[in-house]
View 1 (cartoon, rainbow, N blue to C red):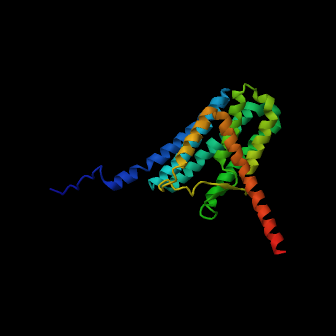
View 2: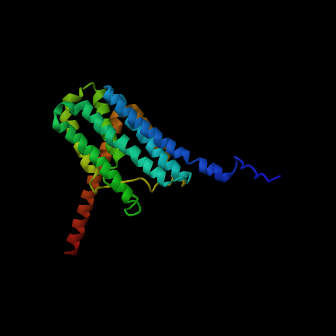
View 3: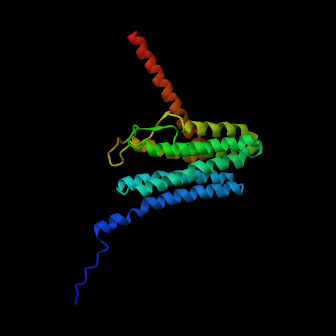
Length: 255
């Protein structure tokens, strides 16, 4: 009678480690679904729901990378899948939301602004993928596409919350959409937050600061989120201005 190989136990650590690869990809799929849901809601005129879905996609997009690093389940497939999901959730979805909400009646100017944003997101993601391991990990090169999407979605959300029709602020939406698209392909430095180690102990005051952040966001989500991401979008310009000032001071001292 031939020997029957022993059945592999489900408690085998190697099998558990392989199985957990599904988790970050499930989170990426959730982010993709939120982006798709935002597009559907924009097509049916529910722009506030569409804007909120972009922020939900941001949460899942932030989780999938963290979970993959914490569980050591990074993979080339996951990286590519994440980029494709980002293109839908933070590239196509915000552009279509802004167009359907405010810029639809602007003729060619409306779809040009939407396309500049969409193309900027695609170029930003492609450059990010090719520059991994080359640029300083502490800083992003150009405005990250999730932050750009949050800025557009936050603007849509707050204006809808104020019961102002999108057509009344179409030129503001036009300017903001162009600003986000151009800033994404710029070389401005933006803090990435990747130097934060979740396994390392932090000062006690960090916890009250996090609680205060939750309180502020929950007090008026559309206004606070829009202000936060507007400040982040402007931080790259401020950082460049400060560096230029420091260089001028250094040159003046050497002369």
